[in-house]
Each structure stands twice: as structure tokens, then as C-alpha cells.
Length: 72
Image (cartoon, rainbow, N blue to C red; front, side):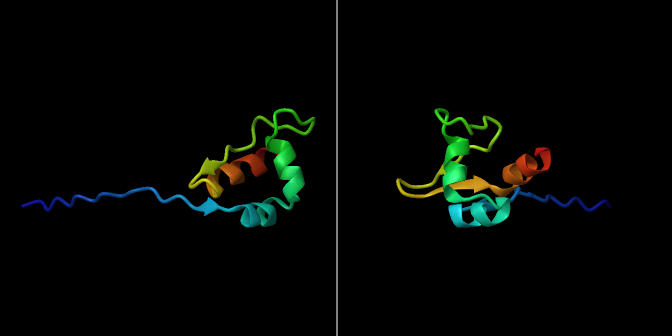
């Protein structure tokens, strides 16, 4: 008799806070804000969007940041 295993695998996402984003990219806080600011000449529309967790907390998906870094 075959044994059927039901495995429910949920993907896990690592979130980066600003300090971790700075460390991972090697960019300064002000440069990162420029890259995200549509009014800045440094604006990069391919940069991953921040995810708002609370009013004062944002983060970025590490996988999206890694993909962005690979394209650079």
C-alpha cells in the first residue's frame, strides 16, 4: 500500500531592515533614499520596493535585493 505524505511547504522570506540593506548593498542611507526617490536624478525604478510593516518600520525582501544586485 503506497504511503502518501502531505507536505505543506511555505516559502520563507528573509526581510532586510535599513541597516542590513546598507551592509548588503554597500550603499549609504542617503544614496539608497535617492535611488528610491522618483524626484532624484539617482532614481532607479528597478530597485526593490520597500514593504511597510508598521508606521515606522519598513523592510525589503532579501531575494529581491539580491536579484537587483546581480543585475547591476
